[in-house]
Length: 134
Image 1 (tube, rainbow, N blue to C red):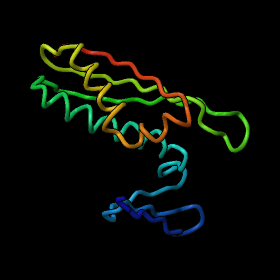
Image 2: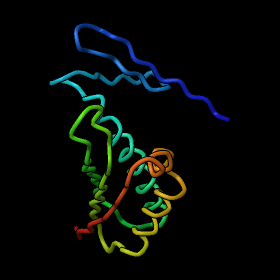
Image 3: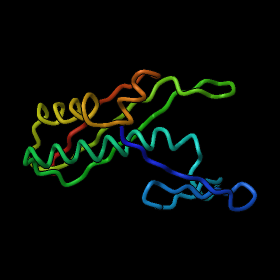
Image 4: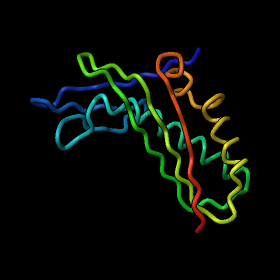
C-alpha cells in the first residue's frame, strides 16, 4: 500500500494554506482563493485531464487544446453533498479520431484516474466530449 500525506495550515481569519504531497501551495479562502468544496470536482477533472491527454498523445493524435469542465449537482441543504458531476472534455486538434478519444476517456475513467475510481462508488459521474478542428 502506498501512503501520501497532504496538509492544511490556518493562516488568518478564513484563509487556509493547503499543500500537496510535494509541498505545492493552494490558498483556500473566499473570494480570492479556491472554495474547499470546489476542490473535489477540480481534483476529478485535473486527474482525468492529465490521463486523457497522456493517452491521446500516445495515440499520436495532434491535440492543440484540451479543456475539461465539471458541472456539479449538490443537495440544497447542509452538508450540500455532491450528487452528480458531469464532465465535458473539449478537445481541439488536427484530424482527431473520435473513437480513439472515447477510448482514451474510457481508459482514464475505468482504469487510470484514482479520483474517478474513488468517486464513482459514491456519486453519479457522467462524461461527454466535443471535438473541434484547428
